[in-house]
Image (tube, rainbow, N blue to C red; front, top):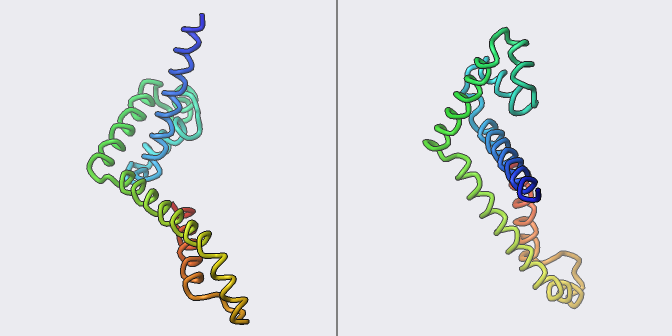
Length: 147
């Protein structure tokens, strides 16, 4: 009994992973599909409509809807295989995350010393190094949000 539940859970996870992957592919390459294909693909993958619901809306068979979704999925995968935009996006995201981590570490390591210097010199401006690191952190945050 537990084996059946475990297999069912694994299948559900695989289906969710596939939906997430197709959604991501669509985010990057969806505009390259024809308008009718986009509509059907969005309804099935993003809006979670059944083949029957879409077929009724579009005036085509369930098999026709299935074929369009399958063709679109394959086409989106081929776009990524050729262009690698998602791969590049993920690499950039990792690099920016690393920049953010490094800037946070530097700020933590230097904050105490920088604040002490400011107090000793009776100046209210934070040293340039601190400002630059803060800007790096803000830029990293902004880029990560945009990605």
